Image 1 (spheres, helix red, strand yellow):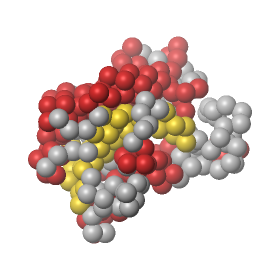
Image 2 (tube, helix red, strand yellow):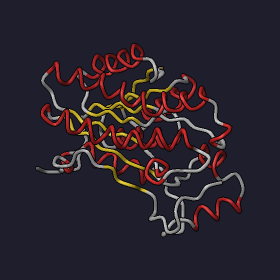
Image 3 (cartoon, one colour):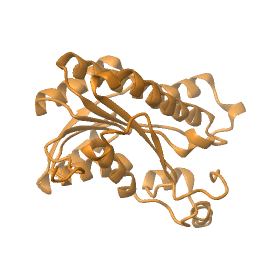
Image 4 (cartoon, helix red, strand yellow):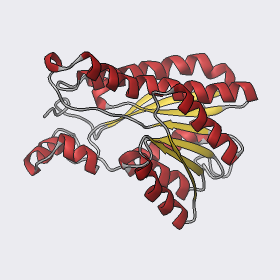
Amino acid sequence: MDDAFSVAGKSVIVTGGGTGIGAAIAHEFARRGARVLIASRSAEHLGPVAAAIRAAGGTAETAVCDVRDAAAVDAMIARAWSAFGGLDVLVNNHGASFFIKAEELTPNGFATVVAINLNGTFLCSRAAARRWIAAGKSGRIINLSSDAGVYGAPGMAHYGAAKAGVINLTRTLAMEWAQHGILVNCIAPGPIDTPEAGARTWPTDEIRRRVERSTALRRLGTVEEIAWPCVFFASAASSFVTGQTVSIDGGPTSGLFVQ
């Protein structure tokens, strides 16, 4: 094998691909020769990312999709299959959350965050797997959890619970679908430097410094440092890896920072 880490020619869906980590994942796959479909609930986020990928010589398609809607998810998978003649990799990067004390969290707030982060991951994974199984093809699923799903996160009970569910779902689907050649793995990011995370989690310089000091490496991660492991899980280099969750968090030294 010339390059076990190659993803050239692969067809990839990245949900939540219009901003932050998702956009970086889409760019990295496209830069390495993959054909990418980016999906988001917001159409306005998709255009600039797709345009930038195409301007750099890559191939990009877009789909507006609410991952809580099974029909919309099926349509997204069908669009990638039609545009690319198949699908090789699904990256479940979508997510949503907000800070709130557990005793103040409403049932609707809890259910909404779980529906996006956990239910959406299941629906997207199921839709892709159904296509692969029916066609007799193998595939790769890469789920995005969070350090909140590994350690818990006060102020984010809904999000932590959902992301913990993503880790367990990863293991279960990996076991169920291994017979079909579908590999399912998970990445749990720690504090990653994006505008969205900064506004929500470290809105001041002092809080940012505290977050940086909470990691063994004493810094925030970059979006590329999440995109690169995604490429590994999509490539032949990880062909004997499934059901695993890798924490990409700079090595926490004193637990998660909580605002």
